[in-house]
Length: 311
Length: 311
Image (cartoon, rainbow over all chains, first blue to last red):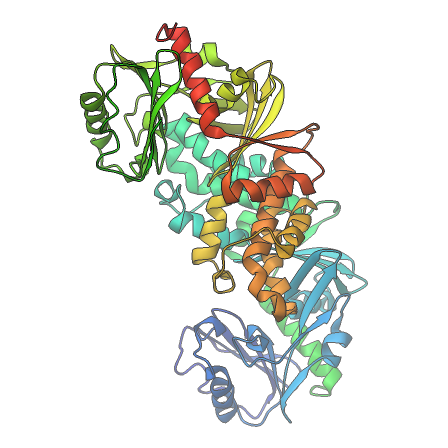
């Protein structure tokens, strides 16, 4: 296996290999990850490039897919994530929850005889509207892989953090919180931006913020309290970033896990996932880390099996 | 009475009047309002200028106060609002809740033998920290004026909306929500900014948003649902501004009025106050509009009486 990161131009060179049986692409807003899997389902090659959908010009998505095809040959190819949105190829809708791997496979949208795009999932319950694209392959892959049980709660930290309810191996509930986006907006453009000059860390101020965020006064009141905290005690001003991060993630955990009991499977690693795990633990739950790349590949393999791409 | 709006350079010309007994200034982040009151407490003159504290250069606040003095003579002058903050004159702290007019008067900070700045109020309860500057004169003025009862809930719509609990004529609770600031950040810089090109209105989409915001899934989840709503039904995209405004104000009302019963006194008028009143009514409360300028003057008069500036 070859792991290459950030080689935009040549991110698919050398992937052509007679042992490759299909290609799975996790194509998000900021990053494209291309995986080549062998006949036995094993990973042969992984490439990552900053070719996310958010950075593509109109029409560029189709050209990028064609370029992938030209480099990788007429192998079966499964595309998941924001590539299915209107900013990508477009025309790929959402299927309704509850949805499992069979539903996703039935809802695939063919782009040519060898390739298909995974549909998104939508949850509508009363006034609630929520959607996901790409995360469903990771979540359902983790279930089929055995790393997440068929009845579970999953957390997928990101700019738009997702809480996913899984029942009998299907996604039954989606709750997306714009926590990361709001943190970035407040840090970059908000009135308290001058106080937020350092990256957040899992320190005492973060945990103090988590505790305040968990107490349920609401995220916007919590945000103002970060300002009041620094005004009333200027020595605390320098820890505002960590405190605000704690407040927002604490509120996120409170909203996302309302009514839940049992462990929480955090699909992801890195700093942000660490902050979420810290807040989940502080809320009295047990957090379990699950590798999201492994889970994505398990989900892609499960779909490929259903399509007859693997024996 | 003369009402002049936006005359920055000449906002105090002509105010000098032998009948004027004292000057009350409501000096906020974006606007300075200078009121001249007669010996009987009646309003003689009102001037408004875009000389808010947020736009002043370091040190400029003292020079602006001196310029006011030079124009208005050595009359007693009461300054309230952000002019007391570090971005204004500075050095004016916060007094702790519960606080009434006697406490505020006792906490005044003299700037010269004829003038004083009103302290801010701070509420600390458990992990909660909150502050106000200027709003306390309006709230307590409305109480002394009889337009708000001595036990009441007040709402002060603005960029940072405030919910103020009043008991026995004192401010006992402050809850500030950054709702307006977040609305502006999302509209100007957020991922859904392209959908938010029209000003929010009290229309069907607003009321739909209010209903969703009141249902308690949390403000950040509500924000993402605005995106999901437009993705799942593109015909709804053009009403996103109103919907988001409704979501955020609905969530604000839910958090601010949690546990409250009885009417809500909305100190303010104009479009934003109208949106808040609509959401408060939708939540099952009765909203009562109170004129905030009248209330500010009543509060300033009450402090002036305590200082012997009025008979």
